[in-house]
Amino acid sequence: MKSVLIIDDDPLILKTLASHLSRQGFEVRQAETGGKGLAEIESSLPDLVLLDIRLPDLNGLEVLKRISRFTPRPCVLIMTAYDDMKTTVEAIQQGAFEYLVKPLDFVALDLTIQKAVQVKKLEDKVTFLIEEKKKEYTIDNIIGRSPQIREVFKLIGSVASSRANVLIQGESGTGKELVAKAIHYNSPFRDEPFIVINCSAISDTLLESELFGHVKGAFTDAVVETRGKFEIAGKGTLFLDEVGDVSPGLQSKLLRVIETRDFMKVGGEKVLKTEARIIAATNQSLKALIEKEKFREDLYYRLKVVEIDLPPLRERREDIPELVAYLLEKINRELKKNVRKVPEDVMDFLTRLPWKGNVRELENALTRAIILAKTDVVLQENLPLESVDSPIVGRELVSLKEVEKNYIQHVLNMTKGNKTRSCQILQISRPTLDKKIREYKLTVVPPAAA
Ligand SMILES: Nc1ncnc2c1ncn2[C@@H]1O[C@H](COP(=O)(O)OP(=O)(O)OP(=O)(O)O)[C@@H](O)[C@H]1O
Ligand SMILES: [Mg+2]
Image 1 (cartoon, rainbow, N blue to C red):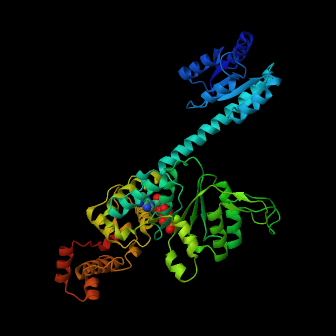
Image 2 (image 1 turned 135 degrees about the horizontal axis):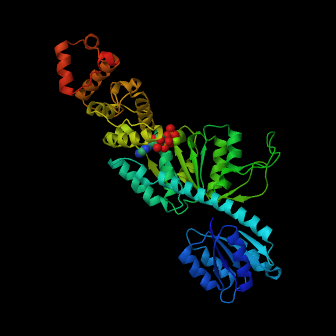
Image 3 (image 1 turned 90 degrees about the vertical axis):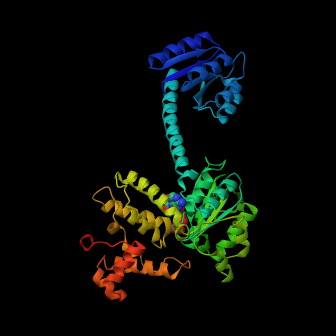
């Protein structure tokens, strides 16, 4: 913090303060009215403002209000007399950093300024980090152009500005958390917290106290009072991950808080209110769980005001090349590597795999290939062969030719490109195998590379 603006109508105060602060190394500007002060802020954007609460033209509170509209907002220290305490308290409530009582004690002034400098530094850092996070979760970071993903984009766009509860369903690794964050960071409440709670990872009692908080002594380990996620989330988003794993007992409590917005801490008696928006995710079919009487139907309807179904990767294979390019950039950046070339046959191989673990599995496979790469090329031999565990790709119904193509590729992969062995397994002649390899443009991993 380098520049200070003093706004005070007393010329003596202006003079003594200015010379004191100049000696401390500050660049000092002065204004004897609120109007002039605001004009000065507009032109020079000081880091710190020392503001007299009683000014001839504008009320100090009014000046403070207008200062808070500037970005970056300067830090304001109020200078006040004892009989102006009521206004001073209001000023602090409106965002002034601290007040100093006149006549000013320079030691206290210097200490307060030091404190303000530290806080401003931290505030700037937090603002920077929040902005970075927002960038990370813009819709641009969700890759795909397939009709299914376009549908997801549309839903994110239309639901982000509302407070409606959202249920995101999709297999593991399809991007449920990514979509939940995109909704949050594109909503008007993006500066409020985004709180994740994984409902399957912890025991029932712990989950309850995580969600609602507990009072001291509520159970053996409850040595201090805690706040639950419903409280911490404020007006932000509470992301209930793996909601299908919530026990029946807790499901009723969840239903209650969603319906009434009221809840109580474990062991507590005070009724608290939550304003959080709820986004729930699951990789199980809640409908199937309802049929098995493992999930409450009324809770399901409360959660799925808007429903987003994320397609598995194998049902949108046209997105794979773009995803590969995006993920390679991301991983290379993180690992400080430069493995960016993907030969056509390797890309072809990647688009044919079943990807049961979806985008996460693709990301892991590419990470491994980048770590193992000795050049700037992604090699098929460095991609995990375990992925090719099903010769019939995915669950979609395909032609016999497709099955034949995939199965021969599977055998070639498993034998690490050994054609003699492949012929034995497939019980076909070598010329037939060679013909199929040409016809289907199959990849043969050379034995040397295996
Ligand atoms: N469409 C996409 N574009 C870019 N990256 C994606 C996409 N979908 C998923 N990812 C990436 O894949 C990884 C897994 O995504 P995410 O954690 O959101 O999946 P999930 O559905 O929550 O998985 P799980 O069920 O295992 O918790 C993350 O690194 C995420 O950034
Ligand atoms: Mg997840």
